[in-house]
Image (cartoon, rainbow, N blue to C red; front, side, top):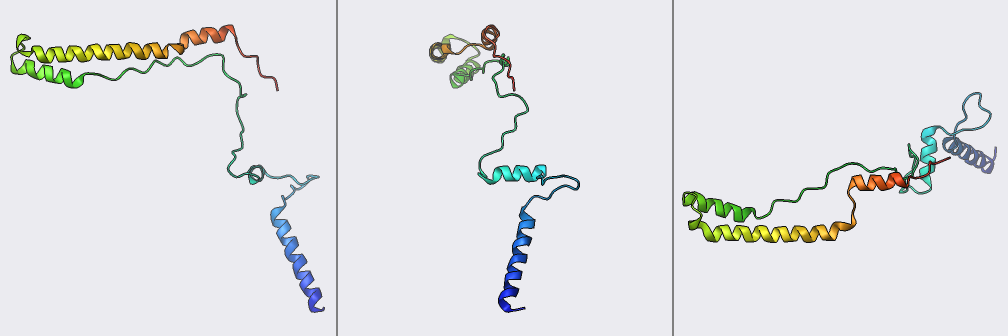
Length: 147
């Protein structure tokens, strides 16, 4: 064999070996080559590795009801004013007349917090509670998904 012929044979053997590594293997007895499930998933992600393969176990439609979760509770307000008022009471044997300034500070803080809570509830009046939302969704349900 001439050197040019032997190098051509080597190149062809390398190419055939590379093809056999990348092409899916056919199952014994199968008429055509089929990719295994894991290889099929890898080939699907080969085009764009950052894009996930979506395989939903339920149809992708909105449900006819929402969960009955409770509204989040507000955080405690005026804690420092209350602590100052109670410390004053403890020092003065729980007499209100000795702690007028601290009591008034606590009541002012509580009134401001109440006003802020009212304003927040007026702003959030656009959202419905879950039970009213479920009643609306029952009146106008989604059509069942046919595929």
